Image (cartoon, rainbow, N blue to C red; front, top):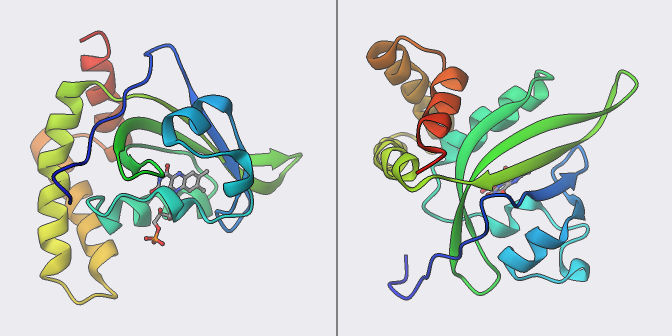
Length: 175
Ligand SMILES: Cc1cc2nc3c(=O)[nH]c(=O)nc-3n(C[C@H](O)[C@H](O)[C@H](O)COP(=O)(O)O)c2cc1C
């Protein structure tokens, strides 16, 4: 990670919203997304959402995300993203299947400011997930680190992942 990366902030009552197709290609982005991530619409539409992936995000988090979406359920998580000029911003994201009737036609994500103390906690956890991923055979690594996270939360907090992560957000939301 370059030492020159700067954190970009946005207001706590703003929402960063994008929609994707079933493959995760961007089909819509709101103005807040474009401002914070520093993109114009033409450079976003049709691009894979991993466009803004920050290299310090563990692969296991995206394993958990896609696993939930493919099972038809929503996902909550803390995500660090790159801006187009290689700065970064942290969000608390809720990603949900986008349905027309009973058919899932894509997904959308609504993101809020991630409270600083929650980010501090999650950064420590993500660091351990990345270490585990580096020590694991490449193909298995995302699933192994995701299972490690779920087990850690079971053992330490006696909670499911979703309950823990929403709790972490809510505890610090008014910091
Ligand atoms: C609606 C939606 C929103 C997403 N938002 C992000 C995001 O903000 N940042 C991100 O890195 N990945 C996001 N993803 C996940 C990406 O599609 C991708 O799985 C992730 O960046 C990892 O990419 P990689 O496996 O190619 O490294 C989103 C996926 C969906 C369906």
